[in-house]
Image (cartoon, rainbow over all chains, first blue to last red):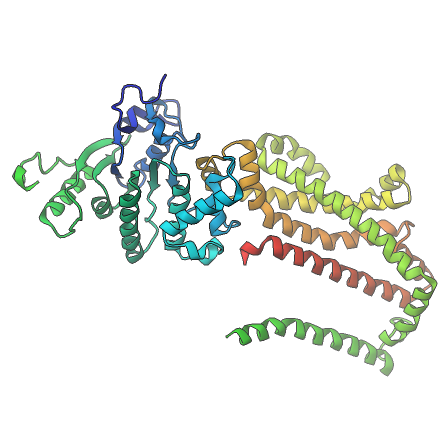
Length: 267
Length: 256
């Protein structure tokens, strides 16, 4: 089977009818999930806690094999056997490595020289504004700084696809807003394809081109909505309508747009 | 700010030295005043001439050399084997389950109980003493390593896998060993003290060294010699522990 079979050439990740069960098919965590992410897109997967969003991310990254269905990653999404860059919820830095060495983790074992590893890690740290902290230990950083190191670590492997698992969920609101802005700057600069998992409606609307709503037991895709042009204005009426639609989709209520609450032109 | 911090870091060792001086002072005074008969406990001032005699005869240096040999050999062998066994059992559940019964049977047997077998199998020499010391150190390191592996943050294995280190070697070298290092180090340190206690036990039966010399002295009621070797052992422990802590703090600098 060739990579990218049955998918358009610019599709980076394609999940077809994916389901996951831990007890041999009696109970499913996810079921019937269809999903396509195209090159350069910023896609948010939005859903309540425990809906299986992180699991979906790991299936897309082939860290977990689905019980049923198919995952196709474009050849471009896999570099040297490393499927993608992954950013974890609590940064998950290795406390015994300096910031610099944490960022180098994905470069080790690739046959790169010490000097090149060092230079590439420093480039990534510069991108997240932490080049000066390269020699420090993770415990000496703030939560927001640690998360930025996590982003740098994912970026050093130069993935075409960046997967982010609620990376800003544990941060205070001010730090989170700053990092969201920074992520958008990095995204504009590097043009990565991003799959971003979050339970925060506001965060999804600020960041993403498309929002995929994942909810239910077993979880499935309840909606796939495009977000308007950038830059985003939280106060714009269209954004508030979108937020209402997302809330309804998560709760399992009828989509207000389809129920005719608003005229189509407003949406 | 900096001044205050450095002053505070000197405060504790300074107080410790004051306490030590006070102890020797009280001890000396109580013997001189006659509170404690010098036959029961020799005064510190009486120890110096006895110690000089031991040094002149070469007994002191010889005892230290012999005991250090037993100590270091037993410590290294017991720590390495115990640490490896603990790491393996902590990392491989099947092995852990398989050996859990064996561990339960062997664990409560103190090193001292093995002395008859040490003599039978290895003889009254370095090998026999090393064996007894190694056994007592083995279990300390076994449990320290086992616990250290068990308490590793499981998510770090996923991090390693996500960044291309999902194989056995990657898990071992990128996660298990560095993450278990603090636990391994604290096991080693506990073993460092325990091994000195075992040195005495191992030598009481005639293997030459500090323990044997203490035994000879006590059979002659030469309490001053017994105290000299007690203090010698304390000094050797302090030195080995200090040397170890220097190395440990370098390796575990990331803990702060």
